[in-house]
Length: 308
View 1 (cartoon, rainbow, N blue to C red):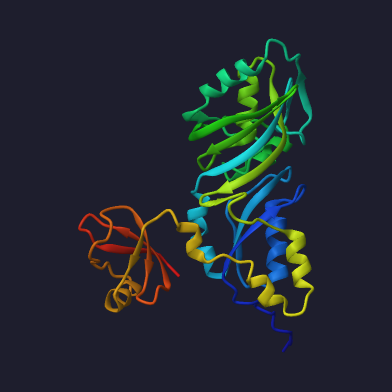
View 2 (spheres, rainbow, N blue to C red):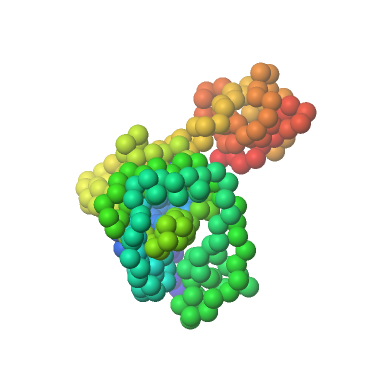
């Protein structure tokens, strides 16, 4: 009988790390490094960032992975620099140049007028260089083979699109958008409307759902690495983590009695006096311990949706 060492299952650590993803790293590489440094048993991220992009990549550890879908669905904020006059295969600086055109007749007033056209609900065509699956194959894999397939447009919402700077031939934008928005495609479409083309030269994600730069601290990979080398590393690293319910602060909080909490944790819907009349809610027991997410049903009862 062959023997073998039992694999270390990792620490049972729970929380959300607001990682400031560095340039040049894939989201999965960043996630695996954090998981290793934390020696965490379970970890997941909440929406990929291109290697070219920096900024917020919330990493969910332990029980927080159960709630990562809520951050995936959350709206996002970006600061993006668009290089006008040059289109590329990937709509960013990593791609090969497809076309170069002069940037003529484009001034600040023209840019602002074009940006207005992209506000609100719009249909966006996902780029070939994306992780969307079609026929069981990732689009970017097909794109690398030089294959282009038909894609269906997707509805997205651009909540705001502010011009921060004009430094010709580049413009800088602040974008607040719904999940599923491809900022590379947005930049390319803006360039097309301006008549000169364009691509993303720099991209930073500055917010995901309730987390925004300059409101909460983003943690760098170097900070995590430095702490992991210190004495008492586990406690120091865990102090960087935010609680699970910090991701859900935009939903009302509902406090349950001991009985209601018991039945809810058995999967039963419960009646809670003075609860909201609809939507999702954060659930807490009498000692303010976070239990999970519930949904108000038509009969007014709170149905457990995702529990810790």
